Image: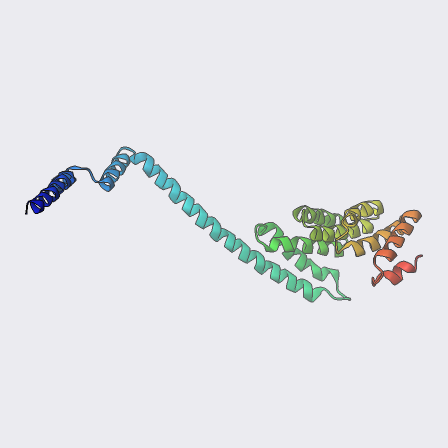
Length: 243
């Protein structure tokens, strides 16, 4: 019995000790709530910085409006540019015939120019620029074509395939102008890239330009390189005809 009392007294002692550590409801009510404290601080900050917050709200609102306004404008420009390009291409396709009258291409040239100038931010403008250049070439406006193809070359810088196409077009323009050496120099960067798929037509035209420019040794080297490199080329019979 005495042992039982002893155990009970020990238990009661531990219970009293735990009770002493227990936080009362009154104490909890006295301590500040963390969320309420942060909310209070935020409210006080807002109250003392009303003007700054108003300005921030105005600026953010303006930025949102600018973003959506710019996005809507870009969508509109893109749509109009594509529509005009489609119209120009349709006119060009219908008028481009073996017996075509160059005057008929004037309309498509004007439409391509409209895409480039009025809707220059649209994706279609990148397609319309070389099309406009080609129409100028067909009209024998070689200076105008060179200017536009130079612009194309700048815009596609870094893409070896598009650069090669622009250089081939430029070389054709310079050839028509009688500037054969400039045409040769324009083509050379294509041949510097061994993996370029447009190396074949570039080398073929290079050999022809050397012949026209009376550079006999250079022509022979170009022909030799062509016959060794492009043994299955459709241009091979034409190249061999000048051996």
